[in-house]
Structures are given as structure tokens and as C-alpha cells.
View 1 (spheres, rainbow, N blue to C red):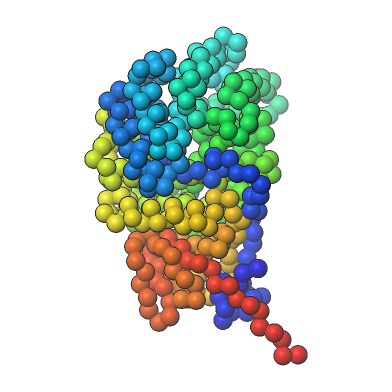
View 2 (view 1 turned 135 degrees about the horizontal axis):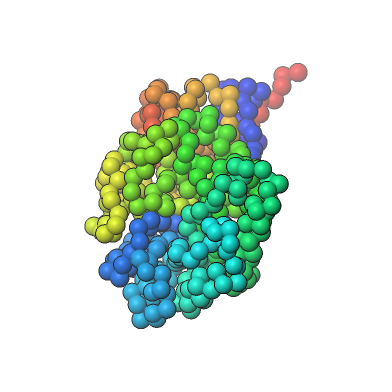
Length: 414
């Protein structure tokens, strides 16, 4: 039990655990940090991405997700794709290949599953021959009846869901069944917890990213609600959370169609804070290339530099590297997760959670929050800590990590 402020009675602080620590063997994809390239890449771009395998590995990433401009390139064993995958593996990076382009059974009500998966299946087999570590189906184009927007009693909806589940099972059987086999991943537009739970139960993706964190406003209370629901849904079916905090992980351009989302017109400080917040969460984390691209001198022909991207700050590189080291050192990706409330120093708009031995403070308010210095400062999304009056200042639009102060209960005098 943690009491995160020594001078405050334990009864006034509430620590609510919403996710239990993972025990037992941990396959790489359970807690991986993945750099996601959203743009489709031609041969030159694939060659360039391969050149960044070493620095991305040294930075602390575990895998790279990328999309070839021509999916049929998987059949060319002498292509730049083969060289790209080889470069990743030389630097202990997993290669996740996004293979959109083959019709999925939810798109067309007259879909013939035996004929329709032929192209996709042959591409998957060719990709496995190249040593690909995972197949990503990209953003699934779910129609209204599969999203749950109409009655579940609709017979066509049941047929569509069944056909899609059949496709997933065929692909899972193709890639293998043990922890060292390639993974199958995708992104889902479904945010309804009940519908998402059913999809997780029916379609056993290793990672099924949803857009919950992408679409929320910059509000700590809403963030807590979304996290609670997400952990509840995934844990109830034994699935790993795969966090996608930014629409840029699956779109090459800056999103402008959701003005209520935290990402809309976000400052560099807000983007940095959301990256650090996401890296503290148990599960896998997808970080868009756009948020680290200025570390390098490369931008794909189809990508566009994001206005106010977090990596415009030269020191951002070192902070991300340190955050990834801390995530590994404290095993944040497989740790328990608890929301903390009742702290006298955490005013409205401040999110506090404890994961492993780390306390994470996200300030979505317009006022600075002062964290007592009994908590050892580890890192901040905006750089060095500001110390004043026995506290550490966390500015608005910032996320800071601290080592949790362990406090022994004071014995009762009676």
C-alpha cells in the first residue's frame, strides 16, 4: 500500500487499482513501444527507414510499423522491403508490416470469404518468408451494423461479424500459435466499451488499438474515465492494452476534423505531455513517427511535418530516451496501475496515477501543481524540474514522473 503524501492521513487519500500486474512469461508485444510510420512508402523511403534502425533501437523502441506503397512488394525477395526488415533485425527491432488493400468481409455484404482472402493470405505468407514479425491490418473499416449502431438482432450484422471473425482466425492460424510467432494487429474505430469487448472476445488480435485516447478532450477527469473503461474491457477478456494516443499513428497528416480532441491544435508542450503519459501506461504503446521525426533528417514523400510537433525541442530526444529507460527499469509495461485521488496538492485538472514504483502527474489545468519533494523527481516532459519551497513544480500542459515515497504508518498512541 502506498500513501503518496507522508503528512496527509491515509484515510484522506484514495488509491484505486484498476489493473493488476502481469505475472508469468511476457512476450515482447505485451509491453512493446512501437514507432508507427503512417505514410505509404516507396522503395526509396523503405531504404531510408532501414537506415534509422540503429538510432531507433538505441533510443529504446522495440518495433517499427510501416506500410509499403505497393503491397505486392512482399513477393520480391530482393526488394528494399527485404533489406529494411533485415536492418531492423540486425538492431533487435521487430518489423510490423501494415497490409491494407485486400477486401475485408465487413466491407461488402456479398463477400465470399473463401475467394476474398486469397490475395491477403498470399501476401501474408510472402511477408512471413521475409521474416516479418507481425501483420497489421490497419484501421478496420467497420460499417454501422458491426459498430453496433443498429440492433444486434439484425441478421446481416451477425453474418458480417461472423465472416470477419472467420478471417481473423484464418490469419492467426497462418502466422502460428506460440509466443514467438508473428503477431496480428489492427486499429478499430469502435469506442463503445460493450461493442469493443465483444470484438476483443470474437477477434483475438494480439493488439487491437482503439481511438479512445485519441478522441478525448484535454481533461484529467475524462482521461481517468477512459482509462478505467479500457483496462476493464481488456482485462475482462485477458487482452493486452495497445495504446494509440494520436491519430497520427495511422494517418500521415495532422488531424483537424475533431476539434474537441486533445490533439486538435495542440501545443508542443501538450503533445510532449501526452507522449510521456502514454509511455507510463501498462501495455504496448504506439508512437507516431511524426512525434520523433525531427530527430532525423528524413520525411517520407507522403508525410507532412506536424505543426508544433514535440520533437521540435532539441532536448526532447534525451528525455524520450530517459523515459524509455525508466519504463524498462521499473517494468511499467507489465505493472499494476492505480488512480490516486484526495491529494491536497493535486487540484482540479491534475491526474495522478501510480504504476510500479512510479507516480505520474499530468497537469491538464491552467495552474502549476506543486508536488512535495518527498517524491524523488525522475523526469518531466518539459525538461528539468523547478524546485521551490520543498516541492517540484509541474507546469500546465506537462507530465512528470516521480519515484513514489514509501511511508510507514504512524503507530497509534492508544
